[in-house]
Image (cartoon, rainbow, N blue to C red; front, side, top):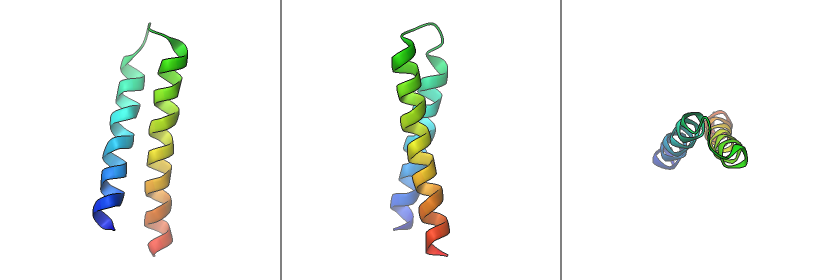
Length: 52
């Protein structure tokens, strides 16, 4: 289970970095990547606190 949580963290960080790097492109695409990345990060943080 720990491996799954860390992979969600890595995927979330990757989506956030992609969303930040899309500065002048489509705003819907940029915020979609940011929201998806934050959702993955919050899910991984929630599962870490839930296990304790």
